[in-house]
Length: 309
Ligand SMILES: Cc1cc2nc3c(=O)[nH]c(=O)nc-3n(C[C@H](O)[C@H](O)[C@H](O)COP(=O)(O)OP(=O)(O)OC[C@H]3O[C@@H](n4cnc5c(N)ncnc54)[C@H](O)[C@@H]3O)c2cc1C
Image (tube, helix red, strand yellow):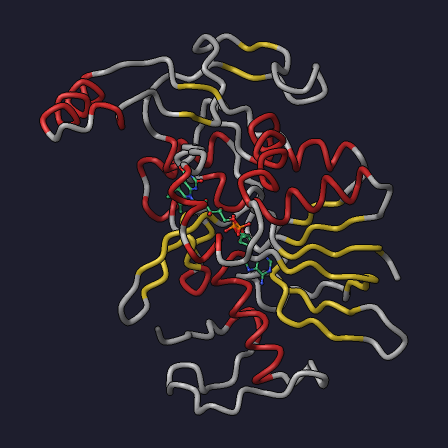
């Protein structure tokens, strides 16, 4: 086996797994279908939709994807860092009402207590800071809250952003100098098309950066199309370039696989492996009749398996 762990997807799930496993001394490879997104890519993506969009079937390999289902449209980030490239970096803590919801409380576990140390870790790793700016939109929001008699709900937003001083590059402020140099936020509000100033604490600046320093391999433009359980244990992964269909990559073998390809990517891959490629003999294919949209063979990375909602 080449690796102890192969991780599919480099978003939040994949990045956290990569760092924690690398810290424990495991050999790790992260396979990401998108590219490494540079500040120049983000500058271009901000003004050119062809550079922004992820539509590999049309040859567009940007970092913002939209999936249109029958009743739902999903947006997501694609690239090294997954959703963190395009997310707004608003990192809210659940309030008490959340934990009182029967979906949680019926399990009889004190989730608030159980999750508290993990929230502390996430806050530290993602560099959560209260947004120090108060601009005209915030004033409107505050006035709206007052008019709705909900003043208590108004307050500064906790953001995973390095506010620092714009244009001024400083040594890593979050990990005792072990992270990358950082420049302060311009308050431009372009977080959703990627922060070309490098102020957003996207995963390439924390979890993935630190994992790579510990030896984790991160392979961009590697879309996983098949997970094959091997007779003696472990897995063989089939991968390909999402656009250059004739480019061949050697298979990757690992003792364990973590599928962290986001909701759409994970379902697409697992359904394709189970229903069409029949790669999971221990799991019977779905007995229900699949909607016409799904019931067509998936040829891995070129063919988008559509799951009707
Ligand atoms: C515009 C936008 C704004 C958001 N704002 C916020 C916010 O302010 N606060 C907040 O908490 N959340 C926000 N979110 C949500 C947050 O980004 C997601 O919840 C989070 O990214 C999900 O993490 P994940 O690890 O499950 O998947 P993702 O981060 O989506 O990562 C999955 C990765 O897997 C890759 N992948 C998929 N299939 C394959 C395959 N077959 N082979 C290889 N790689 C594959 C994808 O390219 C992707 O990079 C926002 C999301 C969007 C789109």
